[in-house]
Image (tube, rainbow over all chains, first blue to last red; front, top):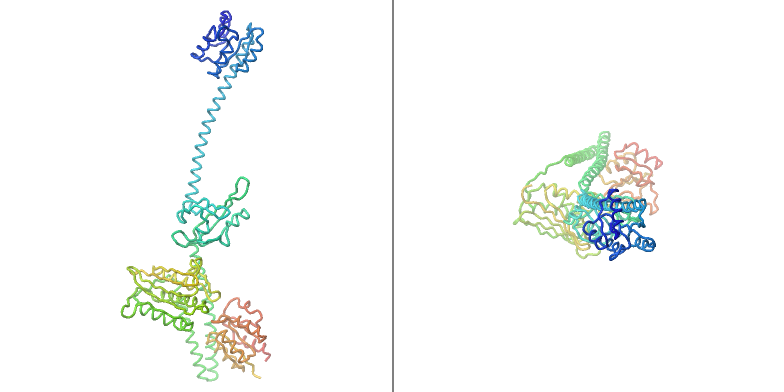
Length: 489
Length: 116
């Protein structure tokens, strides 16, 4: 309470103390300001006209240093303009002399209201700040969690833009395909320079729906895998599809199983076709024998019996064949002379090779430097025969543009492997076909190929715990390599 | 005049069977082992009817059939095959018999087609 009139100070001190306030009094602005600085009261009640530092100066000084302190001005007659000026400067209210109790109460209430509001606001602000801090922490946690879920998902996930550029990918994807910024999915997964012809991502960009596909992909270590691909659109806030998520599952094992099932189906259908022919042949033998007996024609009987015998031997072979394929037959391993093996291979294929006018070059052991390899000869012979037949076909397909067609068979040893190489200078294989040639029913020979030969060849080599791979330059050459481990299998 | 039947099949047991069957029933015969040889034999012998297997090395039955059709021949063809779905391969054939066939049925059909 600041007033230069002692009487007013005393009256107001008593009144305010009665109302429950703790009251400090000062007789001028200077003393009042010192008191404010020392005691930091909630409310300052000051006369507007005082000698020395007047009420307006005190108001300005208090508001400048302590904006939260509420100031009520006490005005005299004719101070209306000053009173209004004081409100503009930040006073909460003014009361005029002589001080009316009710007016004083109203001014004090107003000051108190303002103080409470400010406290509430301060409280609120403090709550808000801690709320924001809490939410920010939770947001960061959940973001970390979702990044973790994305990264550790047990599938290959990538996010592609409309040019099929990989903008994001998860850990498993990066592990297997590498982490190259700005790469395109067809480069990374297919080793292509242009997008694939059919692409579920393209379809999702077009219609916004989820699409699926199966594709052969190549991992960064060169292994070929079969992927099942599912896509989903990732629209932006305006609903426009800027990105598509591609999730891939490795179904190579399932695919191999499908191959086996298909091979079995094919086997059964070829067997049933064969049996029909055999039965017809037997009918023929039966007819010749019966009619021969009727006519007492010994030659006819003999011919008929010949047919029956021949068909019995075919049936025997077929039954053995079925037994061979239907059980998980163990290999009949024995040491086989490489020289003999190659001789037999060449003898079998020679008529075809000669007929096609192909030169056969042998870089294989002679009897003098022959060695033995542990193998199941029947199984591996079939594999080599399939590759050699493909080599002949590859040469024949370019017969018109080549002066000289050659097939080269090479057998060599390393410390722990025996390598069989069969190389032809025929039409060669595109890179994308090189992945496929070992899969079931894949054939680039149209109606002439069954798509079985190399599929079985690979299986045969794998049974020997060996490896088979192919190297080629289109239009130049194709070279198959079978690598067999030297140690006993 | 004796009618001549051309037998096309890669299994010698079956060609001999049909040959004997037809000869016993008063027909002349000629034989081809595959689709390619079939054309030479066909042009040389001018048969009145052909029994045709579908699956053969070199050239398969339907292609041979298309070739003679293109040349304007309308020689009747009876398909004798172990392949399922055989009716689709040569829709214009006069009859289809699945291996193993009943000889009396084949004979009856041959006689009906040749009108003897």
